[in-house]
Image (cartoon, rainbow, N blue to C red; front, side, top):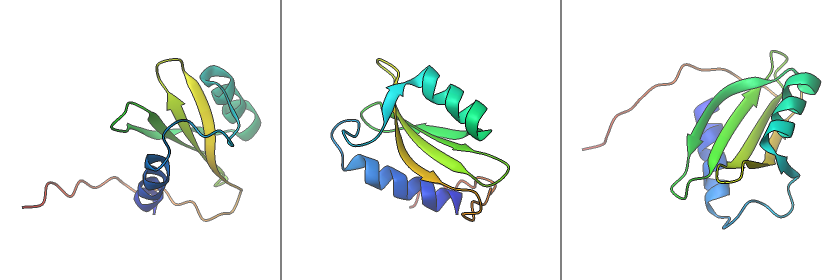
Length: 101
């Protein structure tokens, strides 16, 4: 589930040339502070795309979750997707499938 969510988010984000003009954006430190204090979320994972943008998945024990897109060059982050409490977020152990022959 989490892997599928991350893949879907990466596909969504790969189609945009820049950080979203429609998404709420701001300094990374401010966005993280709000996620931690107002939503009790913690960082669950992150990855970097081919052009250097960082995708972060945040989540809380009550199943709220957030996906941030971060531009590391200036640490501007944009809120890309959110899920409210009870939206069936499921934590799974990562599995590496390895390269396909």
